[in-house]
Length: 193
Image 1: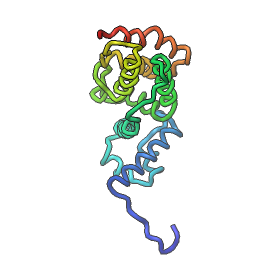
Image 2: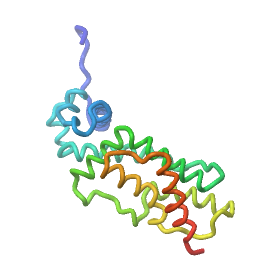
Image 3: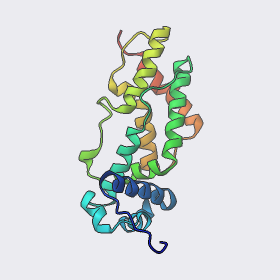
Image 4: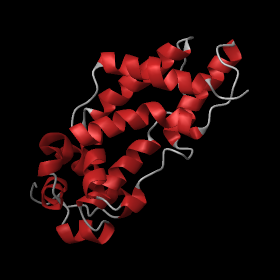
C-alpha cells in the first residue's frame, strides 16, 4: 500500500461478498479437495475468525456459494419451440454448470454436509419452476395436455446430479438424450390433464 494511503475496512455485505468471491475463485482453482477456509481467508484478505463467525466451515461456506448462485439463476427460460429440445438444452446447461466450481461445491456438500440441507426432488424448487415454465410453454403450443407433478419436473436434473455425485463424472450428451427420450419426456407427457 502506498505511503499515506488509508486502508478501508470492509464490513457487512461488502466483506461477505469479498469472501464469497474469494471462495468461488478458490474452489475454481483448487476443487473441493483443496477448498479450505484457510485458503479463502488468504485469498480474501479476511481473517479466518471473520469467516468462522459467518460460516462454521467449508460446507456452510459452500452452501452460501450455492445460495448466491441460485439467486443469480434466471427467473425465466426461453423455449426453442420444442419440449424435447428445451429439456435437452436444460440438461446440457446443467452439465456445463456442474463442470465448474458450482459442481464441486454441490458434490462436496452432498458428501460431507448435513442431510437436513438437501432439497427434495418431490417438492417445488427453482429448477422445477424453470422446467415448469418450459412445460407451460409446451402446453400452450399443444405438445402436452397434462400438468406434471414437481417430481416429474425434477427427474431430469435429479438423475444428472445423482450420476455426478456418485460417479464424479458428468453424463455424456448421448446419455442426456436417452434420459430425455426414455424417462423425462415420457414422465412429463404422462401427467393427467
